[in-house]
Length: 440
Image 1 (cartoon, helix red, strand yellow):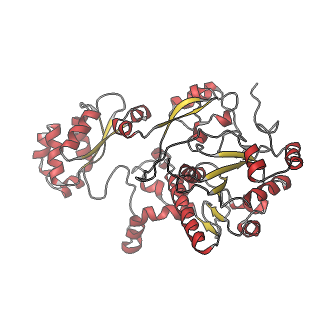
Image 2: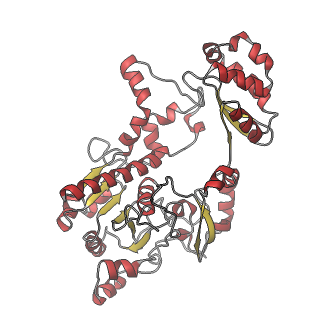
Image 3: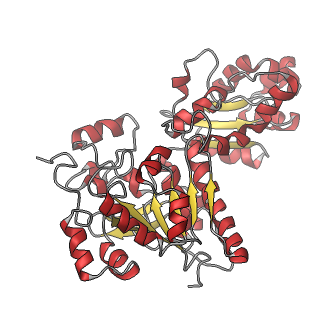
């Protein structure tokens, strides 16, 4: 296999939840050696899920409600649920894991020794976490002047919201995304969570790191990168923001609607909870939709003869169009509409996605095997490079799986230092007793 672009780059990863772990997932996939530095003396919230033990009955009940974050192989979280969580394992492939709790004096010194051997540090904790541990960029660059440190706080490292705690859904609420994608005359909670901000932050964080590597290659200088997750997402809503700043117009919730196309939405199909999405972007597309559905009365209706007319009568149009689609098979209708030049696609669930012929032909899903989990298909790479073949290489990493390699080979701890780290609880198998709930 050809050398991957980030081969030889070492990343210390102290990330939580999704935005940060997704950033380091992308770096690891393209060759970086990503070392998760994980404490065993405390459970990081909303990361491995170690802080809460969900019994099999509760996991099955959550799955029945459509909650996948608590997924485990065969719905069984035991014996070590922190190594079996679907939420964590989805972004833990190709990574390494080593113990150290930088909030303690002993763990902080271990962490600083590792930083001396790294090119990059990625973190997305509350800023106070880094401040209290005294491992900010000014401190770390004394140990490693070439270090690139990516910080991904919710709202930035300055300003009145600096220390505020937030998950992606709170950030999206504060910047207006929840409002814009909501339904008119409905509670914002009805639109559900999508966590788009986490995904975008992960991608842009990886992009920022590669730019900083390029800068260091030219100048020899490391640097601090500040990526406010709120500010990172806001440009994606730029047209709505400009509409307000230029025209003074505050856009109403959009739901499935488009600001000029109609019909534009999800329409019921034959079967239980089957839907198709349709986007009509022209009069020609409207004619094609009516021909495929044999909706000759809609084509003859003067209210829908023009784009403006269809837009002004959307509610009635959606109701009438749904009466035609609800008796059609979603997949078959998708092929027919696409053949007629109409923008359309079925709404698939995970099972249908896993057998999608497009993804199957391209080999998107890749199998990874871990002895305690088994062999499963994982989502593959988000991009391909023509001259650089690549694939997933390592199954999701278990807690502390690489202590020996990281602390003995990379950092170079002596036998005495290694034994001391074990004795004071910094390094070891699993969590320190009393940190996670008992299984009995």
